[in-house]
Length: 323
Image 1 (cartoon, helix red, strand yellow):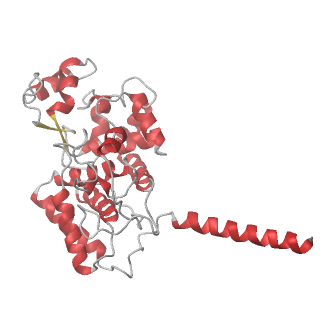
Image 2 (image 1 turned 30 degrees about the horizontal axis):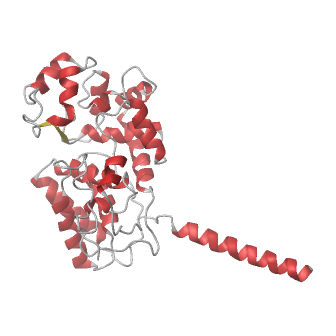
Image 3 (image 1 turned 90 degrees about the horizontal axis):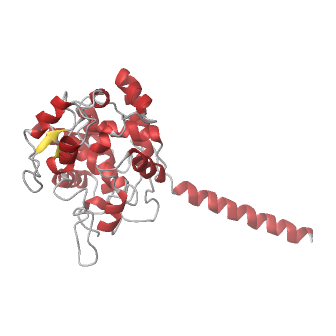
């Protein structure tokens, strides 16, 4: 009986060890993940991102947005980069990405450069994560150690993107709900939304707000109306900066704008509209340091969303298609 009990305990301990090891391998690793297999990774990515932003400042926001939209659809797995195939329609033509998501050619260039120094080693998903960090830094924002070890998805779907990415028409409750579903807190929502301190939006995304909503500064609305006609289908792709004050600098002016009712998107102004998140917006408007600290924490947290690790997924040779 004792022998049987001992055998059972031994098997149980082994099972728990395997379970623990299995869960551990599902976690991302430190920034040193590629230190031996690809020691030139960070300078290679940095120089390519820097060159792209030097040519077009807006590209920094575009690369950051790619990482956001990737992580919100089945986790941070590089799936947003996949072109359509005969087997699936991908994320690039989803509502939030069609005629909007950009920077794919820059990711191609980074991948090509990385493959040149360490072929078949670094995933496209990790390249997205590093590029997002570097973009923020180049535009004046904070830096952080990027967790690494993600692998690339082999497939995706447009439906997943349509269901996963928050829309500019969302109210506060829907925004909080979507972020919470991914393990992101309300504070993370306000911090991550601060990425709208850089970049631009299309007229079709903010037309209803500037013509129909009342919680908007009148002068600000008139300024935006001058470049965004009221009629649907007219000027849909005309652009306006998400942050009127400093659209190419990563700072806390986005939150200051919200307090003045100068949020460009409906979903932006929902964060400061007499609701539960007003105090967080005010704290970031008052202290850029607080915003930067919370933004970094939220970015690291977002980067942890359902990564493929270990033997799951693959390391794509070309970010646009599975091997």
